[in-house]
Image 1 (tube, rainbow, N blue to C red):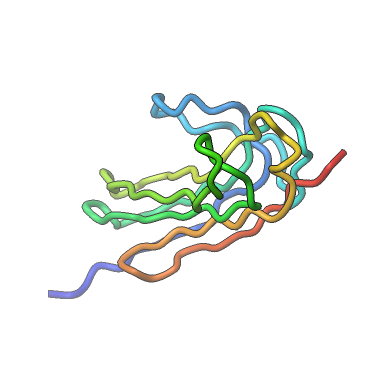
Image 2 (cartoon, rainbow, N blue to C red):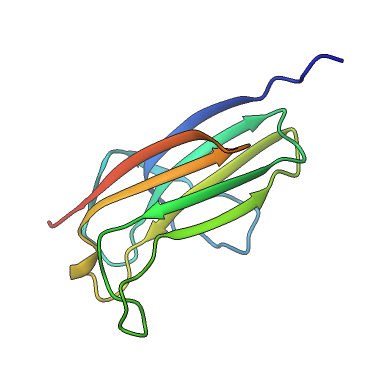
Length: 129
């Protein structure tokens, strides 16, 4: 039996509308850009499209500028995993700027893997206004 091909596409990246993480709706693209203004509550990241990956798991990591977590320790990269539940699947990976905003400035690198192989790796730069 032939192995099924999986298609993937980095569909968009940049600034998005606010995202309700409990909704099935992805945020709407507002602007394609690598430069994100240092602004409270701005949503940024990327959307990938996967075709033919139903039943697979995608892993992600967000490397961010150094800042302290709520316990006062250096915050680790944000990581996680999602189950691909359809053959035509869209996935948003991103974050938003929260208080205090001064320590969120710098390079944010977003990486997504499928079957242990990097699908997409994109750096976005949060810059002061």
